[in-house]
Image 1 (tube, rainbow, N blue to C red):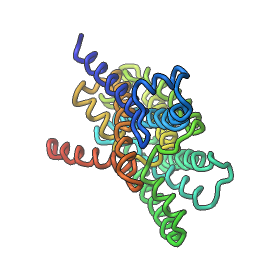
Image 2: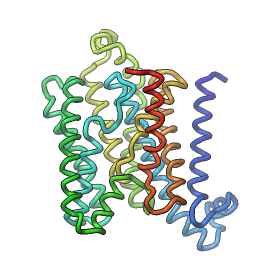
Image 3: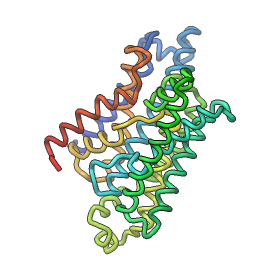
Image 4: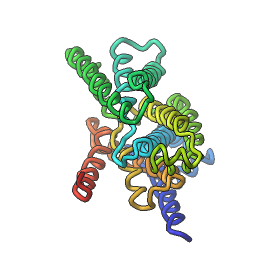
Length: 325
């Protein structure tokens, strides 16, 4: 078995472990026997409710959020030819955050779907604004500058709303918790909101591995080898936006997953995107599920986005120390 196959098997095993742990651990522990009994329909009523109504939707949402962020991070790093690029670089995450904050502030017209729909709308408005601002060729440099500007703008508006709602303690707490990310209290409705779109975008992304490899040669080099660079860049932008927007819509703002995971894969297995993208999906799903476990035991103030930052921040500092700019 080759090194690449061993790495793939290792990440698949890690994801399996993360899924089992996610379904088993919590205030009410479920043993592997009880999990199997629930799957087979032989569990008692309380175990069945915990498994099917609480743990399974939470696990599936976490899995797809991780897949979306991991894959989107790999796409952004290929697009900008920079291993330190992240899914939120073009303002998608901050636009989604602003949309969700506005929905939480001004009411829920569509019930449980209000915040996710507003988040997705904000994310797509952000990427639309980025492309509009950088429409002269939509070069990576123009897009990057537009993304930086919009991230600052959306962040300022979000901060203003937080300040204005400071007197409304419950609303302020809702907004802060959502901005820190999390997958607790996810339901089957959240699964159906995110899973189909992330699954479809991930499937469409997989065949683009070879063109993404050629993009590393530069636009002219890739073009000379038969890649329609302009079309490829549009495909990558759209797919990355879909993945990040849907992940943000059901999981809030979760940092570092899309930055750390593809970089770890690249260090372990090299820059071949035909392997990097699927491995980033596996690694992203594993990281989100594993980082969600401490939030179940460390108190209400501990959020998934906090844990991923505690994991990703030291890794990034180590990386900068090892490879100074």
